[in-house]
Length: 382
Image (tube, rainbow, N blue to C red):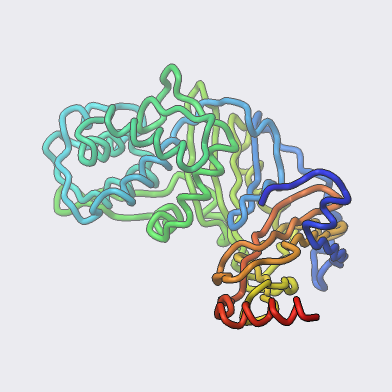
């Protein structure tokens, strides 16, 4: 819907309604006084509300950094989305020769694609990543093209992959914010979520059995954590993308080049859970008034929310939430269900934090021509 300037013209074009309400802290909220923001040692960090993408904490989140093995989040995601996890993969000499952290794969060895994904995400196997790439795209370089394309699609605009595993390479970089977006997208996939929340796994068979243990120590110490990937190189330092879920609410933390990635991550996650609560401001299908319909069988039509809207607000000082409802003053029949008829702007303390589109709640057909004709005659006679 195009906005038009001019107060008087707006009054004629739109019906604007302000609904202002104040949320109070919920009963039973944490009694611990919440700081304005936690202090972390990481050079770059971000805390993200997984369901909505709302940022709850930001420290140099847009600063370009080396991602190390957090790169493997994208590798695993593409393997799950594009591959058949039951398909057997033959390890090439090139994949077997990849060093640093590895599964010690042997050329000619056969494993299921799923086992390679577990090896990449739990044990951080660099060789497993190359084997995945060659299997799905024919070569690692082809697969990297897919990785970068997927990053752009997700919205990770400041990310550039040069390999599948995160080994140091010129031009291989990302940001804490981009990693959080990639993690948010990946965690919506139940297969990915299951893999990254797994503490240990046995893969292979006979003489090729391997026992994998997840490098993410948080999974072993906090039962509410559920992902996702560590990363460590001299260039990148200690990195961790982590996630935790309490009462159905999931948060994503990213810390890059941290002196203590475990402590930093837990501080961020607990800050998000203890100091913020998720509020549903708009529910899907919620009614936001009526709009007159000219020449319609019905005189008006309901305006309903196309989607829900949630926002995390501080428990101790939730602030003033406003809903600015903007509706078309009138419509001309026919009107189709789901036709856009307005929007709800969400403001927190006067600052815009989101928008929900409003649609017609049903069909409203145009009156038959003869009725419209007689109506005009009656108007003329009157």
